[in-house]
Length: 171
Image (tube, rainbow, N blue to C red):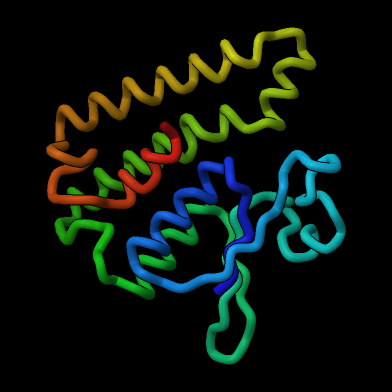
């Protein structure tokens, strides 16, 4: 497997955590999102991932090369194809709680802090740091409420899960 990522990308970090927890070997291919205007915008990487984002996990499946993008889709693939150690609880309600936490981070916090969005906010004359801070605070309050409801030593009771895998890089 090859993981294309950026060292400061929380989405790439999530995938690295899961690969390491599952003790899966992979080659890391750095894609610098800032240098020279962003390597992800170059023709070679754009051909691999037309969204020009990281992470991208490249693997062999049934004799062909498969490229998976979007961190949650990659995490779900890793969980389904390499179920040990499990990063999702067996109970369906607790699985839903893990997905709830994952989505708070994945769609309610992290994308609101992406460089492209913050550059856009700045171009409109607003304060990008204040915008990002407000998104982060709202998301952290939601995670705190979720953990008070169903947590324990981890975001969701029962052990380390994809919720924690997504949460740690966000912090």
